[in-house]
Length: 273
Image 1: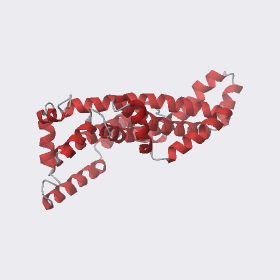
Image 2: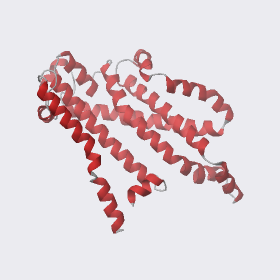
Image 3: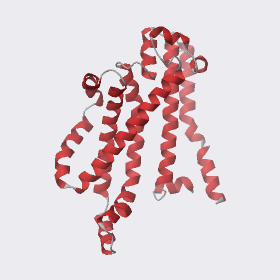
């Protein structure tokens, strides 16, 4: 137990994991020294702007934003992403697993999903804006669409990669079809599905911000839009930095969930060793 705890602590403080952010901050600082603040403000100035606008940003009220703070706008974006990822995951996983087991369904859905997976998702944005308007509906629908496609492909592939011998052995031992799904199919596909969920979640933040840029009335994307109109580079960088930090935290939580929900996978065992 001591070795496991020590291993987890060492993994948590691995300096190599900090190398990327440190190098990025150093490059940002060096470029900011060579460029005027109107083009690239220094990191400390952006951090001060995050702190100043986090709870209250009165200047945002001039642009008609209801949530005149970075926190309020961020909460709106987070709510949309959580809702969209939950809906998209449910649709994609159920569809992918069913398609892997039902040939007729697979023949109907596979071409559509494979085509949707190769077309840039932003092509669908204008249609969603027309169908759902410029409010929350279009932004959520865009992220749901992308997440559902990604999770469908991952779930479908995970079920197809599962060796049939495992289900056959379960049936020989008396497992019912429902029991084979519960005890063989789901545990065998969960690691790959969770990996797909992590990828979909990473892309969901950018898609949500872009959807808000296209016409939402709230959210971090809307903040970026109005600040871009005012050529407020420091404010834009502050909003982007805050959104990026939330995305990194969400990815870390997703990775922790994978280790907890699928402890039988090799990466999880290595991380806990």
